[in-house]
Amino acid sequence: MGSVDIPSEQWAQVVEKTGGPVAYKRIPVQKPGPDEVLVNIKYSGVCHTDLHAMMGDWPLDTKLPLVGGHEGAGVVVARGELVKDIEIGDYAGIKWLNGSCLSCSYCQNGDEPLCHKALLSGYTVDGTFQEYAIAKAAHVARIPKECDLEAVAPILCAGITVYKGLKESNTRPGQTIAVVGAGGGLGSIALQYAKAMGLHTIAIDGGDEKRDLCLKLGASAFVDFTKTKDLVADVRAATGDGEGPHAALLVAAQEKPFQQATQYLRSKGVLVCIGLPAGAQLSAPVFDTVIRMITIKGSYVGNRADTAEALDFFRRGLITVPFKTIGLSQLQEVYTLMHEGKIAGRIVVDPTK
View: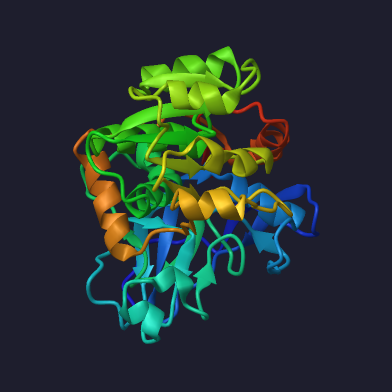
């Protein structure tokens, strides 16, 4: 196993009990298995999923104690003896999908996230809120050397996830998609991918700060759910013909927007659900859904090909992630602001601070 100088201990943020808070402490540095790599995490994005994991919001058990995080960008410092296509010193990203079996029907058809044996970074295996993290070599993102690791970190979950969702929407250049939760970490990136893909966007969110951010990022229109008296009418009016958008991408962290979305879609519109509000339900009138041929679908994280495509958009300068970098030691403060809905754009943490 090739390697460079690697310490035996490191700083990490550890969830020791469901509900938190996280504990900033020293833990051992693990060694990669035969098919794994060890990545020195330079920066890690913070995702709403990390908060859900700490709080136990989802009907899927986390490991405890748990190191969260799944948007880690860094440098490969060690590899297992079976790893031949990644070199020490390569840039690599650790994503939500940490590994899969590679042999089931889902893996063989490019649906690795649906693998029943999938390993999830910062959920079922330790993630990227530490200085050194492990992932299966087949699944780490290959980050081009010209990419800035600090700026690319949020692409590894937020970017890949919204890019996949936009592909699932089946929208074509010149069509319109509503992005619900557009001023947050996922939404602000979705607006840029949509623009780069030739789509018009209607940004839906609340507050002047998020309005300004969305319009700056290329949104065609902004609908403020805190000020509108008729959100459905306003969203429809924001399209040129008043028929409503061809699709809606739901990245909101509350249930209500999911219940509204089918109402403003045009006939044959596609509703793509990405956000995962705790305990939320989704309903739509059966009659209206049938006679207007509305499609409702979920979109999970992207596969390895989606990852490479999403990173290529970033490499070409088409995606600029709005982010603020702080020390890993301040992670609990980030969770508090996230819970209060007070974060615009993305937070990136530096594990050395």
